[in-house]
Image (cartoon, rainbow, N blue to C red; front, side):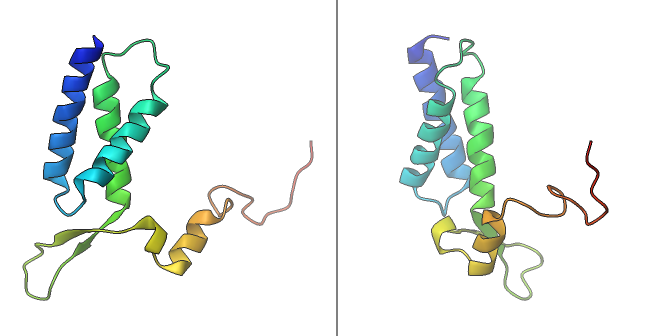
Length: 113
């Protein structure tokens, strides 16, 4: 894929993501897309860069948003952007810990090989 075609594909990715996440600023979306594209800049095969960037950007934005619904709204909610730097302190602490039941010892006897 030529650089010009890739740039056009990225513009379409930005538009689709902005439509999917209307409460997130365009600048925030552009920043994440730029970060993800830069992360893949060394890739030799460029045909799927736009797809990969869209997927990882969407995943990151999903992790930064919450669904807010009012009583009686029949399950229809509103997506609000959650600033990761202003999240709940307990949640920040949990994210910053490297261990956990799935990543570390489950409390059984340790085995040394």
